[in-house]
Image (tube, rainbow, N blue to C red; front, top):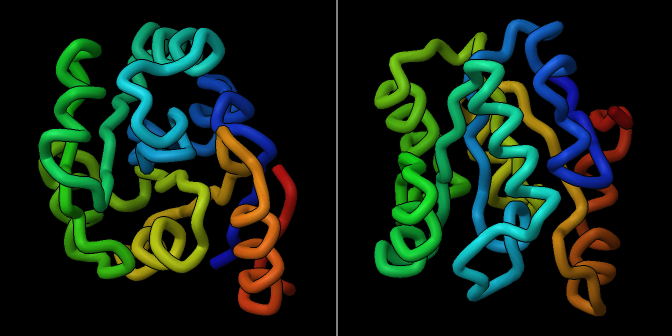
Length: 158
């Protein structure tokens, strides 16, 4: 199972998702949908979320962050979520798929970290998309350098 890579979560358009039979997106929160501690999405992500909703594609946030953090972001948007998901374990992913009443085949996991988000999605049998973080910096560069040997030969650009 290959890992898809995209520059940004907004590159996953509803049309692209539907062409691949995707009916649900599980997304990491911090640095995938919003910067750390941001309690709302930026304009581009808000438009992307609205486009998913209009297209009938479910979106659920699956985060390792504490309940308070994830609820503060999701509640105003009416988004379902799973906090303290236990990534890189796949159990949280399977729970999210079950809550959405979807199958693994019609669900994709999107995140900015290979060792948590992508590994969790793969353990649950989901298609995965690794995206660049919303806020890039020294730690992103260092982390991607470390991740590269693990994703080499398994990744393809969107």
